[in-house]
Length: 228
Image (cartoon, rainbow, N blue to C red):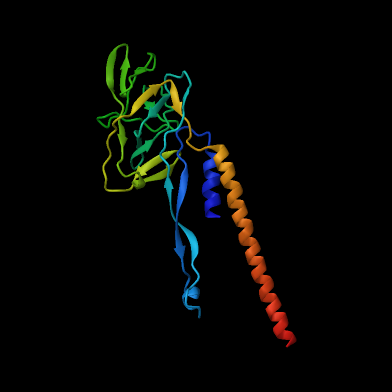
């Protein structure tokens, strides 16, 4: 059921810009009842220890929207959240009437100096491959694009954001290119998700059948003992 929930969430976000799919790490679980069992080898059951995020590159899709920025590489955009910086791969940005460059939900996009990006909303915007922002040839700043050596410290925050939960500070992104007028799609394959969904459902049916057989065996044993 846990695997099914992760898979369903992946498939629901197969068309979400910059979304990264989740997988699961398994471990074994031995219940107290199994430890007290008379057999020498207690029964162990598989369980999900924790989930992990696949940060593989998604497909860059052209949109011809000058406010769409697609990242190629391991970098993440930085935005100012209510409780600190958040990170995202979704480069679908907007310009407010006051000139603020924001993410889809209105959180301000940050520059290298940790200040929000401020633009002239009446002028066209140019962003170079290294994230430098220009209007009419004048440099306004550079987008703060960072990367993490250990991505396991990044926890999904919702709305396609990540929060740094580790002690590792973000570093300036290297080998990361900004593509203006393009957007990174989800790295979740709907076809692969459908195949996995069939596999998970088959496993679920097998477990249900095993429980049913166990119940039948228990009922038969009670009936036979009762006859004796």
